[in-house]
Structures are given as C-alpha cells and as structure tokens.
Length: 126
Image 1 (cartoon, one colour):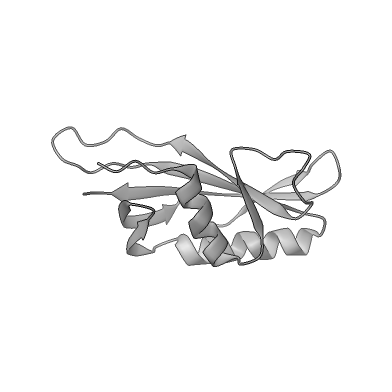
Image 2 (cartoon, one colour):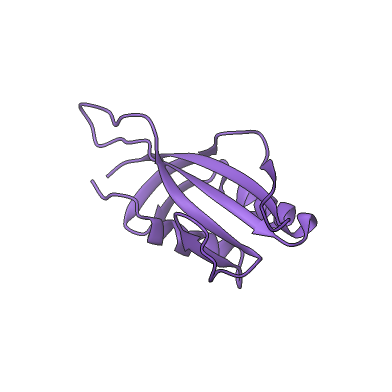
C-alpha cells in the first residue's frame, strides 16, 4: 500500500490554489504572511483484510486578510470534499470527505493573521 506523504498533499493543494505557499507540518518565521501548512493527522485504522485505509490530513491557512484566508480555505474545501477516484502522489484515493461542514475559523495568530482549518479523511486502496 502506498503511503500518503506531506509533500504529495502539498503538491495537490498547490494545484488548487496556484501561487500560494504551502509548507509541511507547521509555519516557520521564514514563511510569508499568506500561506498554508499541511500535516497528516492519522485517521482510523486500515481494514484488516484488505488494502483499504483511511488516512486523514489537515490544512491550516493563514493570511493578513481574513477574507483571503477564508477564500483560500473555501477553495480547498470545495475542490476536495466529495472528490472521488484520483491520485495524490502514488496513492489511489477512492473518496475524499471533509471532516466538517465548512472551513473552521481558528481566530488570529500572535501576529493578527487570520487562521482557518480544513480537515479531510481519505478512503485509499491499491
């Protein structure tokens, strides 16, 4: 079974929001104000007797403008929620479902940049 990687998720997010900086696992001081990070969040256990697994991931979006952060979060949500039969890296995704009904506003960070989170669980198979 091909394992999902942060680099592969980042490449997929960059296709959805071209020109937007996407990094892995956390923000750093070197990142621009308007950017996102992705992290794999585990998910439920895989099926014992098949190649079906349910990896999950989070995308946290930040921007100086709350409207920009919300727009990027909505674009990611709309592009991925309900998407079926596609590839992320070398992983076959049977279905991608959001873990919430809309992007979640997390509030401002320490530098007053708006933060939004979108979370997804994938159904993957060989």
